[in-house]
Image 1 (cartoon, rainbow, N blue to C red):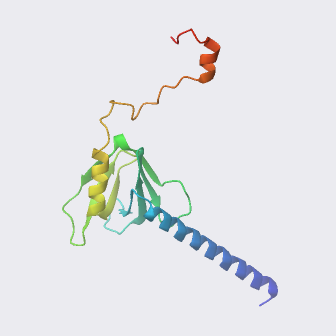
Image 2 (image 1 turned 30 degrees about the horizontal axis):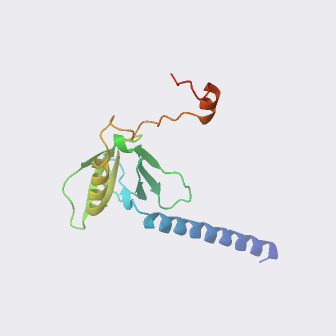
Image 3 (image 1 turned 45 degrees about the vertical axis):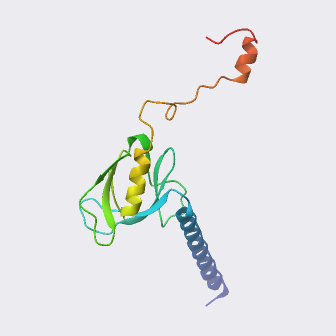
Length: 157
């Protein structure tokens, strides 16, 4: 092999190793974060295994991110107050359940561990009732500059 081809093969191998390291590091970081679970997205109408995803929930909503990607953006996202879970059938012997998640751009079927399903369900139910409190409302903040222009003795309308 000529020196040019050797350098090209070495560069491609180095790029593959860097991408593999980044995917592994991203997966490890996501799995160790509180509020995450592993699942598989089930294909619609088929009994295949589906693509592996990491689910992450926080105070705002649920994000599903692909395991084999370095993209930091979620593959599927839904706001917490719009989410609904429906279990389809009883749990299987391996401890997993199939859950339909509604509330995002499109309904999605997840094959996940029953403990993770219970945690996700409890998280959804623990959210405040829609329309009460300041959970979904943007806080009213008056600008300091606006108060300075109005003067100290004038009241805001």
